[in-house]
Length: 261
Ligand SMILES: [Zn+2]
Ligand SMILES: [Zn+2]
Image (cartoon, rainbow, N blue to C red):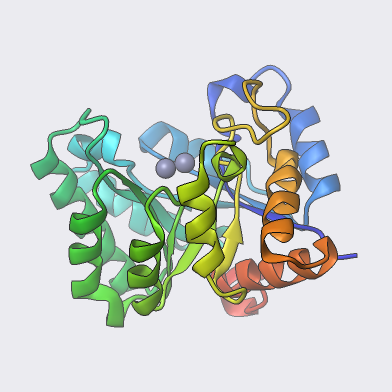
């Protein structure tokens, strides 16, 4: 039976400090693989350090930390891409809900990271909150030169999902797609073809029903996968096989030259 992959988790978050080994063990037992995401200098360093077989890292500056992305930070991200278990750049993007970095800084950091991804031919993981039009406009300008792109923790509607799909992107859903009031997200998931769909936890945040409100961990991606399989009207095993295959293709895990470790 094929297992799911958690394509976006923050095992490098402080909330996993006390029981990191136990959580990691549960993760690797339950899942095919997981990708731990960096959001700033410290968390990228930790994500890279904690990699091991089937636990990969992505490195980037979240829009919250956009103002911190200076030349040295870009050089560090470039350096990390030489690590065999660093499989993507991100998360990066725009967040107009929490403007912890000013919008102008977010835009600059976003574009610098996209340009680095084009230079290194690394796929990118996009964080978009309440910035659908600007995210789409920015990514449209670069889409044909990208090695791959996923809209993580998808939070926009079906119409924008179609627009991102038209650019060749993947769409990834987190636990919030299971929330009773999240019909807009389920409508968006319904239009994503099975060869472009990914699943994630974004843990420790957004625990799916019925563990909502608790600290989320990668193994909880099963609940999200079950809900999405039902929405797609397919057996869970078939759903797991398709989305895990998508994830392995997106992160190029079966290409020994890229992620052979
Ligand atoms: Zn995010
Ligand atoms: Zn995240």
